[in-house]
Image 1: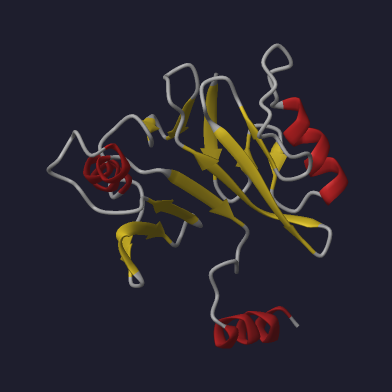
Image 2: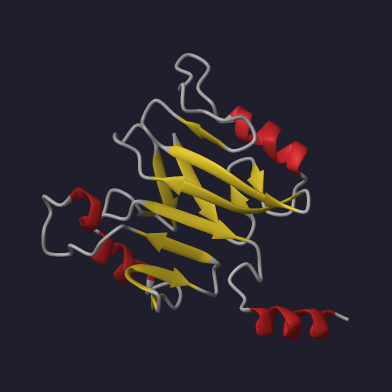
Length: 165
C-alpha cells in the first residue's frame, strides 16, 4: 500500500487536528486484520505486515503529529511527490526533497533533516551516506509530519500566539 505524505494535512485517513478519538479510529483502519502485530498499541501505533510502523502523537485531545517508521519490505511505501522516502538513500531523499522545498540538517543531529516549510522531519540513528551495507544510516528510519508550530521554540510559540490574537 502507498502512503502519501500530504503536509500539513496528514497521511491517508490520519489528519492533523482531528480529535484523539477520530485519530484512534483512523489509525485502527490502517491495521491489517489478517496479520495483527503483537506490538500494536491502540491509540499509539500499528505495525503493518511489511514492518511499516504508523504512530500518532496527540496532545490536548488533538492529533499533532504522525510518524512512520521504515518498513522491512516494499509492500508498503511512504511517498512525497513521488519520492520514496524509505527506499532511496537518505542523501538522495534530501537532494530530491530540495527540488520541492528547503530542507536542512537538524542542528542537534547531523544525521537528520527538517523541511520546515512542510513540517516534515527525517530521522536516522547515524549518517552512513557512503555505506549502503549500513542499513540504519544509509536510509532514513522514520519521517514525522506535524502540525504548524510543532517545532517552535517557546519564543516562537509566544510570537505565533501573539500574531493569531
